[in-house]
Each structure stands twice: as structure tokens, then as C-alpha cells.
Image (cartoon, rainbow, N blue to C red):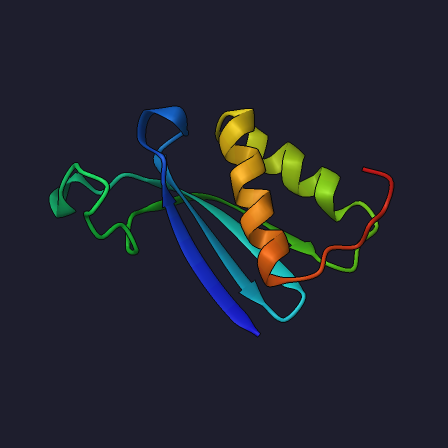
Length: 99
């Protein structure tokens, strides 16, 4: 299963854009700088915005939730971190682990 979503968070995230790509059990979270040449509102296409950080985790890792939380919360608020992890969990089964 492949899934992809771009979260256009704006001022509540470093860079303003967080993209998530899921290929099988591999989850990739990408921090991007807002591409103002495509517009400044949430309806603008930010799919090709410049990447500044990337993190990868496996859904089968017992610490996947903690790793995702730590990585994403460094990019945005806890509210949006929870929203992004909920979306990820709706697309791929995350190992339960301790967190």
C-alpha cells in the first residue's frame, strides 16, 4: 500500500509544510519550506516545496510511535504531531510497543 499526504500547517510548523509518504511498512516524514512562488494560501500546491529534513521509520519497529512523535514534534506543535500520527496510523498498522 502506498499513501502520501502533504500537511500545509503554515506558521505552526518549521518551514510550514510536512509531507508523509508510506510505502509498505516504511514511513517517511519530510519537512519542507513553503514555496511562495505557488501561492501563500492552504490551497496552493506545495508538493514540490524544498525539502530541508527527512526522517524514516518502520511500522514494525516497537518504538515507531515514539520515534515518529519525537521527529514530528521537533517540526510542529503537539496538536499537529498527533494529527499526523493519527493519519499515519489510519494508513498503516503501527507496532504497539511501549509508547
